[in-house]
Each structure stands twice: as C-alpha cells, then as structure tokens.
Image (cartoon, rainbow, N blue to C red; front, side, top):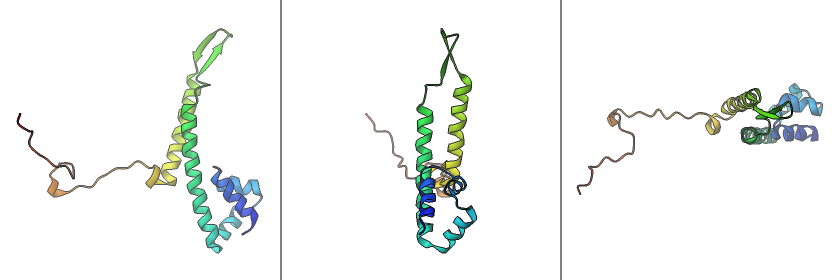
Length: 136
C-alpha cells in the first residue's frame, strides 16, 4: 500500500475529513476511493481510521465542554463579565460534533430509543417482577 494512502488514513484517524486529508497529502478523493475499491486491506484500515476519528471527535466534545477560559472577559481592565457569545459558540461546537457522531456511528453515539413493545405485557416494563409489598 502506498505511503500516501497510509498518511491519509492517519490524518483521518486524527480527526480530519477524507477531503482535507487528501488535500493535505496531495491525493485526489477519487483516487483514494478508487484504491479503497481495489484493496481490501485499505478498506479495513479505512474503517478503523473512521472509528478512531469518531473517538477523537468524542474526546474533542469533552475538551470543548470542559474549557472555561473564554467564558469571562474583562472590560476596561477592571470588570469581568460573562461572555455569552463564547459560551454559545462552545455549545454550537459541541452540538455540531454530537450530531456528526450520531450519524457516523449511530450504534455507539446515537440516541437510543428502546421501543420494544410486547402486547402480552400490557404496559408493564419488560423483565420486571411484580410482587406484593411485604407485610410488616
């Protein structure tokens, strides 16, 4: 496998999109995807790189959420005020990454809705044993 394609995979695993990674390495997206079709080992490594990228994005969410250094700013070098714009920008960055993650790997990062319904259950939660309250 060509070292350029391995470099693209490493950049994808580090969080870049395929488009940005290909631009950085000097490979066209079309060539990269053509090689994916031809080489099973490249497809396997690409799938792994995508998993690693999702984990990287997840880590970025935590870093953004925990970062508080720009939450306040000083006015006239004496008074500190809350910078609502910076807080909203951080919220937007987190929300965008959450949305992307839920699309990239819905089983791992998507919202889970358990809609199993058993007609016999008659509305009781599944696997719940009902018993009488002990008499004291």
